[in-house]
Length: 298
Image (tube, rainbow, N blue to C red; front, side, top):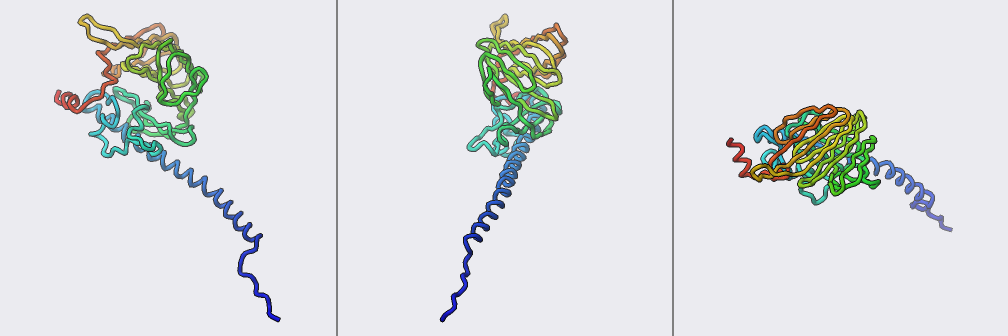
């Protein structure tokens, strides 16, 4: 009578045990791999933003004004690779950052220059401040008439509310866009903008301790805790030339108003008004090679 040969295969219980171990290992490794990939993409994006922030400073030194229009064109002489203008999370994109760029005459080390909101689960972003300082920041919620507003969005009329309690009322028919709103070292930093050719009045009530800026084609109004209005529009001078006008009026606190073209600024106390006039809509112009070469020869 022959003996039964022992089976060399795994029993059902052993197979289940192996599969359970594999599942546990995958459950541990997959989130770690995903997190590492996300961090790598954020780091690459932050490096891009750092290069762009430094390039804008170099551009200013050469042309005595900030780069305007789309960044890949304006900064082509200062950034070696076109890939520096593309966020790793922006699949198929060629210009990931122009919509989140504030063209300043000159940026200090703590002033927002350019950002990207594409990282994490929609709650994180990469931000470059003046002189190339970069941070991985937590985005702050902004709502327009109760609806969530994303960086880069432009809305007309209504009210914007920010995570720190700040509010902006937009005149009927007026337009405003969101560059970014984020928390940095526990402080809410929000930057909004008025599109070119928009006749808009903004009534801003900013929570004390927050950093808040309104960017128009003519000025940047920066404030920490105050009430003020920003009025934008156009007017013609005595010879019929178009001038873009921004008027800032302060009711409480102080507002620093900066001329985006020349870089001059002034701090307005309560009850004071500043009006900045520039010819045309310079902030919307794309600095072509011919114009840059002409400026450089001056």
